[in-house]
Image 1 (spheres, rainbow, N blue to C red):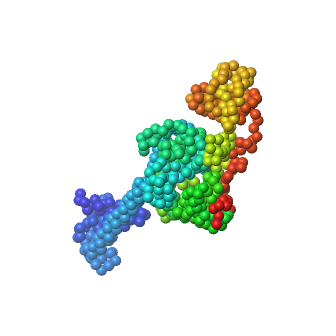
Image 2: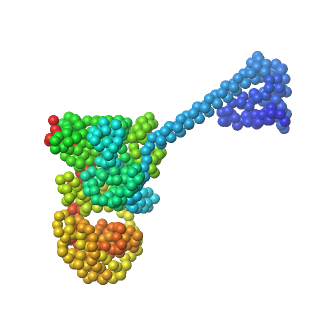
Image 3: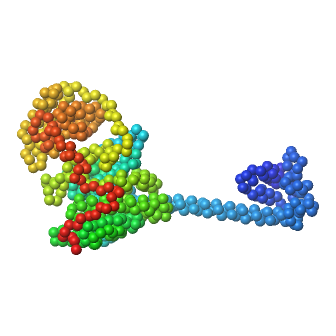
Length: 574
């Protein structure tokens, strides 16, 4: 059978279906050469072609059936032209669609290629991921880092201090963004850059060296192993597993601020953050009293202002005000659903941010933004870590207020909102773990750690507490050596897992220590550290709940508060 007969059969059989789909029958009708007669449909006395004419002759009836005075051959020429037009239209559309898809893919790859990535950890991380809740959801923790790196012309220009070019960068801004498992609330906690902490061992891949653990100022961690070392330091301090980090430098802040349209901020007095003999440097922020929208370089000045806001603590408050305003503005402008805005922001953000490798695609960054966009502003709370003067240098540095800070970290580990709201959910039932071993089977080492806060250790404290433990059935309790600690705690080996925790809790309960005092650690066995908060007595002294309330007397900003306004330190007013 020739090609025409096959097509003829197919054409007639498709007519009804073609109408339903909106196809043009002429695509099938005009392949036959001019003057040829279409074959009769198999199994039917009706002539093929559906015209009602017999045999495909050149009789006048053909012209009448076609609705014109031309011969049937003329009809086919029109049909062939129509077919040619449709064919080229189809080809053109295919090229356009393919071109658009290719352009979209290439642009997506372009954005991905913009992103600079690094390892999540520098090797000193050992925090465990939070277990999913009953609905299979897990909280999200992201460390936000602002680097003072001056290793580019643009950053030197924006940050001054040309002498620092080529030196190790410092993480002058450090914030932990905690998003609840159900994505209904978010918390942001800042740690002042001059906080003294324990920095773990960190591998610096850029210098191909391993930096040993040390006790240092937290902003130095960035120069000891990059953003991964900052993350490890936070995990060691808080016990919170941090999923990702994101870092931006001076130039990145300027670019992103312009892309998002800046932020609305407020100062109560005229401000001029200039350099002085006592405080050289300064951000050069110059604003009159009242409300302002800051963007670009002025936004960087706002975020870097320190002396005019009194201290690092004031700077953290100003940064929280800025962040809240940016989020509010993006929500108000529907930027999350405005394709043009999103593309502009994506282009800028992917060029300006460095992120941990597992967050290093446009899709993952986009998905992250979509998860955050629906959190109500009044459920976003930002605060600065509770702290005390550093005994080693009380004028320049601070240390975590252990009781309050530990309570704060526990809230985040337990996925509790900082605004006290419970979203109407019942409290989870306590988990059923293993029972503690019998007291007389547990070996407990007791350490005298009372020598803190500039005070000499209380003599014989470890022996006194050992005696108290033995009286309660812990016959294997004995003294040991260890480091001073401001608060008492019962440590158990990480490898001991749930059983170790149960055993440690039994020790804490026997002596009246709170559940928050029980911690997994690198110790070899159960260890009770008698801290500076327990210098006398056989049982742990009752604590004032307010003394460990992380939200009391702490600088905090709620996302819905549009009336926040910064005080300006007198020497920097004009």
